[in-house]
Amino acid sequence: MTAGEQTRTHTNFVINDQARGYPTRSVTAEATGEELDHLVRHGYLVRRALVPADLAAALGQAVHGLAKSEEGKQGAEWVRDKSIYIRRLLDKDALFHQLLRLEPALSIARTVLGPQVWVDLEARMHYPGSAGVSVPWHNHLPVIPDPIPAFFSYPHQIHCLVYLDRVSESEGALCLLPGSHTRTDLRIPLGDQSDRPGQVRLLFEPGDAVLIHGNLWHRTIPSTAAAGHRRLLLLGYVPSWISDDVGAQGVTPGEPLTVALARTADAEVRELLGEFHW
Ligand SMILES: O=C(O)CCC(=O)C(=O)O
Ligand SMILES: [Fe+2]
Image 1 (cartoon, protein in one colour):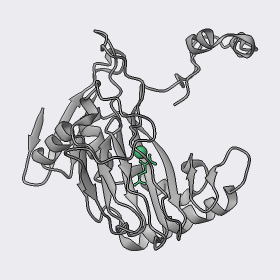
Image 2 (cartoon, helix red, strand yellow):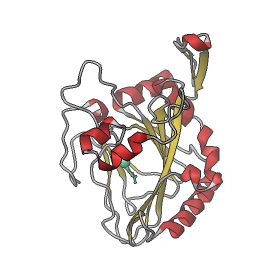
Image 3 (cartoon, rainbow, N blue to C red):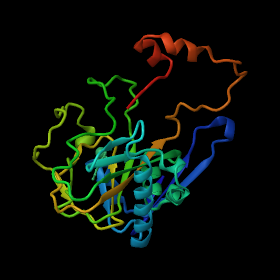
Image 4 (cartoon, rainbow, N blue to C red):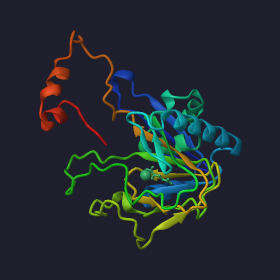
């Protein structure tokens, strides 16, 4: 049951786990019923000053350090003088561990996704002084078939974008398409940067954040030559059961034959064995 106070929303979730005695998980989100409703219906929720400015500065420094160490390395998602994407931050600098319990993002995510989630943390940085750096229209969950099958698991995730630098017109606003997270008929061509009716443009101060549904369409406006650094963190809240790690089950084989099978199998067999790339 969910009960709203002025600024908080409490929910008691009883999990249908017979073996564990139907445990209750209580979640209190620092968000009103209206704010949660906005997130569910429109697919986004802005939270100004989610992270204090001094912490945003320290996190920005850490992102900078990782960028320096990854630039040019094999596998780096790096375009010289333009941008870098850094994955698996929780494995790379313990400073980021304090974001595991970042509130109110975590409790908001738990209220709308269910109380059992895991957290993925990535960062993106645009280098200063380059004009035309941008991310065209995209969403983060491109796995939805049309028509939607009767028992399809719609990929609900909440992604919290935490801005570590000021984002003015020079660095390029974030543009969102409200309500597009449920529009399975929307097919925006790859690379499209055009304005769309109803789009919302957002600028940020360091520490500001926006929570989006992972299937919400969004893009960034191209930077100008006057752009400063544009660093942000992407906190991904994913339902816990969506994971390839199911823990120890039964007697483990000495040498997993599926690993050898996958080496020579075609794409369909590899998918059936669990291979999946975003
Ligand atoms: O830079 C931004 O404001 C958003 C970046 C983004 O959408 C992404 O990296 O997926
Ligand atoms: Fe994105």
